[in-house]
Length: 396
Image (tube, rainbow, N blue to C red):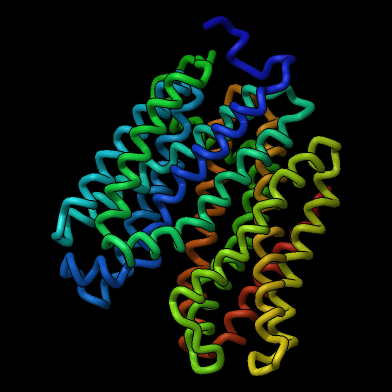
């Protein structure tokens, strides 16, 4: 295709393409989160010991992080539609293998490749920015990201429901079919985009180190998101333990319903995109960080045995999701504006760095709850957010 497809055109991206990209991102990224709530049944069937059951989630996350660093940068040198479709077909094979196997090592290997292929979402998000003119890039990215965030939120309850009805292998088998159908739709519906950059893969990967060193706004926005995502992970790692404990005594289905309240936070993504398009990234970032801080402080101020504790937890979950999701979109809008030619590499670095922050939050959150309970977990989440705010105050 001509160079008109290499960068954003002067025409507004059609709504149906934005919607298709949003749905696609949600469907793909859900594969990273399906296993989190069904670790128990999977470990029983595959013979993975209880003390090692966390590997089921960890391998998927390692694959996803690896994909962010080594797969998504290919969007700068390979035709984007073809790259996404090939990646999705590989993901479908890994999902089918996970559904078929009943042994620990093959299942963990399949989990690694499921995570690797799911990084295709972060090929589609910069692709959406390329299709959109600069003045509405934030809006387009926000709309697409809202689909991705809804996919993350819905993955756990959907996985739990399918497992209750048909068993855990059906989760991966059905997802494999959906991913194949999605690949067919994308190859038929999306316009191609051929990047103008001509680099060999080793040079592409080497260039990412230079981008990281020479792009201070990338480091800053990634640090912001890494810290607030660490707080996010602390909260969502420990709140199910609180809700299932002696104070609330919720069942797994009731906890899944609680998790669904976070879906409303995804509405902050398109709003953040529109605000960013108006040049209000800095004040919007302050508001997003303030929402995250408030989500940590509210449950600390209201004891768990209080009659209003549950409404407070619901409100905190909504504020937390909204603040973290808005900050992510603000960061992506900022780095996407730097250069179209390196957009996929910048996005891969940004996502990988803040994803690492989330991994730290998950591990610290579990330790904090076991050591000092819910309050210690909230104090640590608050500390992450305060560090972010202090760093934000140094921005010029």
